[in-house]
Image 1 (tube, rainbow, N blue to C red):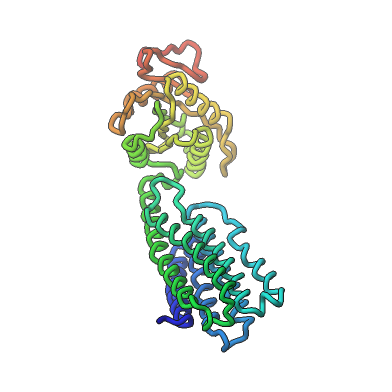
Image 2: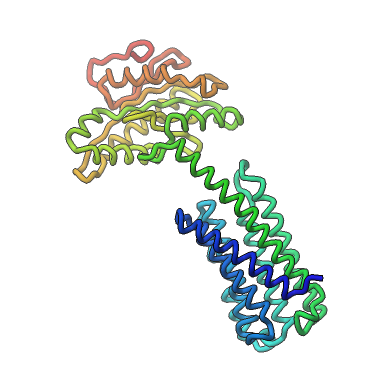
Length: 399
């Protein structure tokens, strides 16, 4: 039968190997999740090694410091998982650290093996619970491995509480008298292995997602590129998760060549970036924004009627015009012309009315720029929004 010390040594060796791999990955691309998880496995390796040296080194190291390092390891794993999802770190991940230090100031808890073991296992159960919640998938398309790992960790919560009860009941005086001591160590080894396997799967999915995001986004502005915009809309349409009505808004920054000529290409890039941030601030969750090329952009927004689509477009137009862009060459006033086309019900990516929206955009530019034109509305009317020169009349179809 596997003894407790052997289980601890195995636990330490596996943790150290995983830590070295993760820290090498962190040195390569500096992703914080690698550093957090790598630090967690390294702390786990040292803590397990100290636990295995019971009776060979002072209790201050083999018990008090060892468990402190294990709690810190869990805190790092929880923090790394939060960073993997782009969420803010939570101080609760490290709550067991001060509580353990406080418990070790009580002589009866510090010097009595079974009481110290019970307190430690309560802390470990809490850590398993927090890590299980961190792993629990929060989006429908999360990798299945996340839920599997979350279930394993939440089961560890029950195991930690169970061993706490067992320690209080049996009152062992050392590892040798702890009936399930070897199983406790083996369970820890299995959890570390599961963390390595499923964590590796999550990191691989993260890397794949990163490369896919790079392929589908515009490197300057960070919004979707043309392919990314079409793919995102196609995925949504295929899943049936799109809004009841959708409008295509096509943007063209007015006199953008003049901005480049008068202020330089660096200022032009700053204008493009600021424009995207301004539009994103006006869009609602679920709306999509993409760069078609140069100074041309498109957005797919939820709008069931042509009137609503035009109001959204004009709100964006007004927001852009009201905020000149601060560049290295000074303030640059920016306006945008917008063409709007309503999508037919049940439209897919192949049905996007690009030509209709482009025609409406041409009409907006012909009407004097800094305005909105609607093409192919359900009522057959032409919507006009935004300032236009006197005497400019809209023609049927927005031309």
